[in-house]
Figure 1 (tube, rainbow, N blue to C red):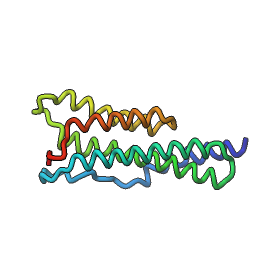
Figure 2 (figure 1 turned 180 degrees about the vertical axis):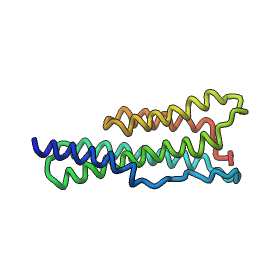
Figure 3 (figure 1 turned 135 degrees about the horizontal axis):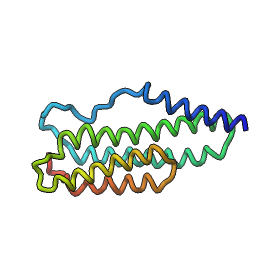
Length: 153
């Protein structure tokens, strides 16, 4: 029982401390420089989602163990999952929603809904340790490919 309480305490402490320790990550400059590589950002988000997936697998495997090393690694994987899900949210909000989704686009509302869906899926992946959330995240990220071709720079 003491180990479970200690584990819960460590997880809560990590969740409180993570936001204080994180540095602001910039997806791209907020100057209209005209240098865009949308596909690279989408593929980067897919890599982040793959990292979230691996983190969830490790969290589930380590949660069955009670030794100190496993608990330490469990906390590290939770932090890793949080960081990579947050990178996806930051990329959508700081890059796509501020620079690539424009009200002048004919399909603006659909684009907005599809980009917002990625943010919500990433948030849910942060909050949960179930594969269904990361699968939804990957699907939502892949939905964005329809808007950005390799030639759109």
